[in-house]
Each structure stands twice: as C-alpha cells, then as structure tokens.
Image (cartoon, rainbow over all chains, first blue to last red):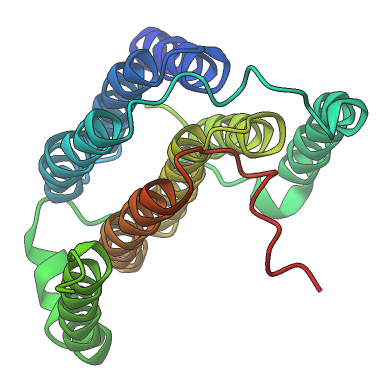
Length: 165
Length: 100
C-alpha cells in the first residue's frame, strides 16, 4: 500500500535530479537540489530513519543549499559554459557510459545476493538504536568527525580571508 | 511495505544522474551539486541496506557521510571562490595549471 507513495517520491526525486544536471541557470539548479534533498528525506522517513530525515532537512536543505546560494551570489556565474568547448566530442560519450553504468548496477541488483525479502523483524525504528550505536561502536569516528568539521571550518576561514598586504 | 531493493534501485538511478552531471557540465558549482546527488544516493543505499538487515549501522554511516559532505562543500566552495577571485572566470576545463 506504500508503493504508490514511493513511486511518486521516486519520480519527484529523479525529475529534480535531472533538472539539477541539465538546467543552465545555477539558481534553478540549487532550488531543484533542495526539493530533491527534501524528497530523499521523505524516503528516509519511509525507511523508518526519522533522525536522518531531520538531519537531512537541517544540514542539506538548510545549510548546504544556503551555502550554494551564497556562492552563486559571490560568483555571478552563468557565462561559464558559453565559450568554446575543448572536450565537445568526449562530452557526448558520457551519456552512453552512464547508461552502461546504470545497466550494470541494475543487473547486479537483480542477482540473488540482493533479493532481500521483507525487512528483518527486529529492524530498528526511532532514534534510540542510532544514538546508542554512535556512542558505543562508532564513538571514535564520531569524535574524529568533530575534528574534521573543526579543520574544515579553519580551512575555509584561511582560504577566503583577504590578504592583509 | 516497499521492499528495500526498490530503494537501492532508486539510489542507483540517482547516482548515475550525478555521474552524468559531473561528466557533461563545465560549471564547477553544478559539478558540486552533482557530487551532492551522488553522496545522497549512497546514503539512501546505506539506509536501505541497514533497514534490510535490521540494524542501525547503515544510518550511523549515513550520518558520517553527511558530516563529511558538509565539510567538503564548505571547503570546495571556498576554493572555487578563491579561484574566481584569482582568474575572474570559472570553467573546470581551463584549470589545467597543475597538469603534469
């Protein structure tokens, strides 16, 4: 009974992803990207990953999309793809190559290893198993992530700072 | 109940679209958004597999992928902005100074 909802979300997500890739104007691409990310958040909800859906909306649609919009404001792009294209012949090769990749992945999916039945009965729901895991098995990566975010923060400050001289 | 393999197939399609964007576009911003699409596809597959196996490991990994993606976008956009300030033009094909 959830299949129609899933198909609706899948069509929305794929259509917005194609829009991100194919549209000329980066602002339109950012808007479609946030719709796409919200759609993926809804898919997380269908997978009973409520915490991830929330984080997806806050971090991606909230922070990353805004960051992209600010970058577009600073860069005033839109004229990058009008000049001569040195790789024009190679660029059209990309479409059949991507088709081949997709075919390959879908063929692997059809093999027996991924024919999982219904979800396992003890499947976790809610936030509690996730944060228990984060503070036990994944404690070290969790702490390393904080160092990574600090390094990224300092690196961005250093990169964008105007030279004093 | 939607079977998890549907979600994995959808994530494969999203990943392929992201690869297409990286291959055919020249605007670094759009390439970055395509990379975000690919990271999201990987996250979706992780969560779907975690659901299929009845453990929260997939969700924990997806959380780390999100943190790394946020750091990557911040640093990447800063690099793009400083390249733009240096050259006043943005096309990934022209940035071949460091080619060997």
